[in-house]
Length: 146
Figure (cartoon, rainbow, N blue to C red):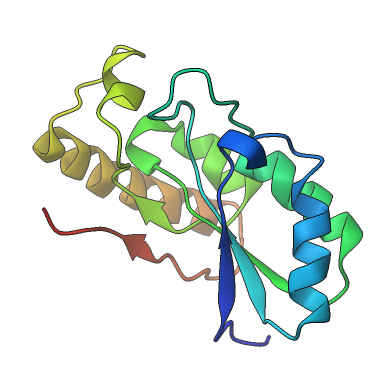
């Protein structure tokens, strides 16, 4: 398995919130010799009228259009159902960057609550993969400093 050393970040919001735009960008990335693409994970965007697409759907479209690049997904694990993540993909786990993506869906946006949710879901995620006999998958945790 090749390691991704150089990936281009592709947002899944705004003008890139249309899943039809992302495969063409990924093909261009591949043609220029990059190792992979990194897809964001959002339900909403700071700009309320911007479209947002599913990173899993975008990854599927990109995989169908490219031949060698790796696809790195970020998953805001505290707001996801861990069993869905376990089934869908190996995704870097993140706390998420927008409070509204939690509050608007009835979840606690406090960073401490997100950290607890991340810890709980990471434990459950690895337990499910183990129970299902899935091979060990690296989980990267994304973050930022205030």
